[in-house]
Image 1 (cartoon, rainbow, N blue to C red):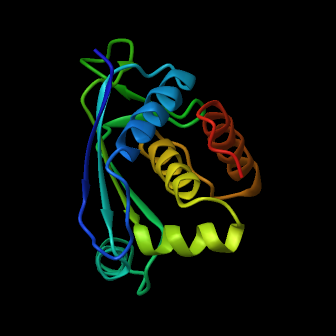
Image 2: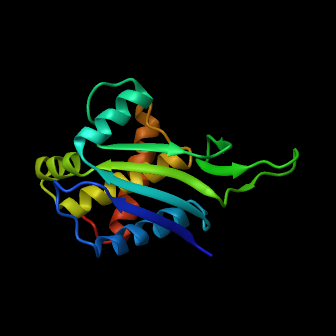
Length: 165
C-alpha cells in the first residue's frame, strides 16, 4: 500500500495538463516518505478563485480568495513531529492510515503567483500541494520558526522532484 491521491480539476480558467497528476503523485510519495508516512489518502481539488473565495469565507471567515486550503481529517497530531496519529484505547499512537484530508488549490492564484515568482505553473502547483499536505499532517506556520521548518521541508521535496525555481 502507499499514499493515494484522488484529484479533480474543477475549473476551466487555467490549463493543467492531465499528465501533471504523475508529478503530484510523486510529490505525495516523497513528502510522505520524508515524514515516515507511507499510507493514507489525500483528496485534491483544483478550483478557480471564485470557488476558493467562497470556501475561505465559509470556513475561515476571510472574504477573499487564497491560494490553498487544507482540511485535515486527523483525530490527533504530534505537534512537535507534525505526524498524524490515531490513538486507540490509550495505547501507543500509530501512524494514521486513513483519509488524511482535502487540499483545495486555486489554479488562478497558482498561475498568478508563478508569474510573480518567475517559475513554472507546475512548480507553483507542486509547492502549494506539498504545503497543503504538510498542513494535513499537523504542520503550521504561525511564527517564523515554524514557517522556516515548513519552507525547508517543502523545498526539499520539490528539489527531489526536480521542481526548481
